[in-house]
Image (cartoon, rainbow, N blue to C red; front, side):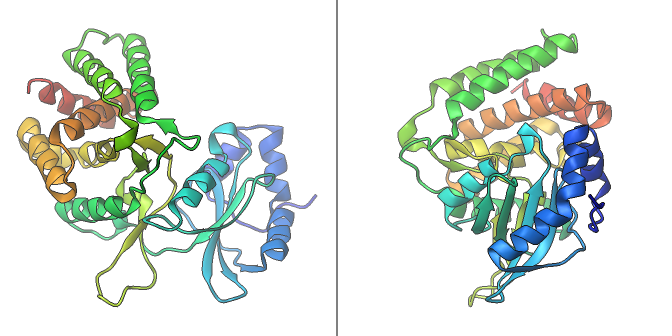
Length: 315
């Protein structure tokens, strides 16, 4: 077996190597897998990968009809199976999400619509980014009548509560006020789960996961679509937890409580979603992410989020 011609991004290469023999085999077989998919899906694939992903080889491609696309081949790890993304993209049918063209479960590969520059790289003010994310989420909140195999909002709240308990104990901060408040909010969001109010939720709607469309509509207003969904059957407020959590430097530049409340009101005004639900999901997300960052050694960022939630707990 020859080594692949493709120059894997370093983070992807290291993750593959960490899988041992399975990861090494995946790397040595990449070139033949790409050539098989080129033939199967009638593509022309470029050898220079796109950067941004951390667990997949991502290559620009062109279909025989001239449509620009992106080929993603995930590493052989249970947490990186692309079929869950394919399932969400099939449910969305292009509404607010990159359109799914093809998928191959055996090869852990998907072919999706190519999009442009991520919102995170456009140097826009925070409020402008929030407005774009909210408008795009409203387009992406596809109504669903059943979970369709997705985790529900109730399950997510319950999972986050257990995660927060476990990490708080490991980090020896189980009695912090923000921990207790996060657990109270998680219990309330679980109890408030109502299938009739649920939609297809992205689950990780940050500015690096939303990209500008390559072709602008006749209105001349740039539109955006999401990539890399987690996929949930949940209330829309669950998605607004992520913009509540992001840009912690802005939250800490002033009074974190008042700035957080202003952001929550802004998210509500852009989407029409209840402020209380946004606040509670945002609080839970900030605490869980802060604890995770501490656990993996990203101490400064983790502490920033926990300082924010310590201030928010006084509300």
